[in-house]
Image (cartoon, rainbow, N blue to C red; front, side, top):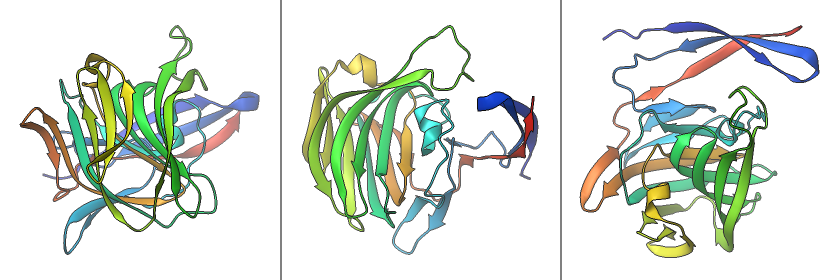
Length: 247
């Protein structure tokens, strides 16, 4: 199947009365795609021992429309009806001398409505794990309204993770609590009903470093409802190009 292109004109309001005129180019056909790249340069690599995806962009502009686009992010295109486990392997590499972040959004209802475990640190290590929620401030406003969302930190713990080490990570959802497990050990648990977090889209976000992610599996009980080995590139990527004009 030949690759198809979709071209769309977009105008986005910026501060100070400026407009950003963009042309969006969808590079891949939509029928076989699983992931939506919201921001970043996520590249699928066929490795000797395993296939993985890695973010090559590292930095990101604070667009302000939602927290996902403020980071380098990809999420599933379609929501999953029900799950109680999201597991994957990750290695954090090449941190910058800035605040480093890695976020695992799940229970995503929209780009501004989700829960996430967020890891933060510096160039030496990741030092803290937070459980956060993104909510819409004013639902009556347009999705193009900047900063019309709020990030709430519901719980956190100091926990160090080194760079250049491979970690098995799992988000485990139980009827009344959700936990983040690293190396099969729980490091942060939050009291929250499963019906609030156990369905919807999920994905990954990073900032100021290059995460390598592989071996993604989502389960509901013993049933595997989603699996990704990156044997194929199944990303829908949107390239933006254009110019800023005075209104």
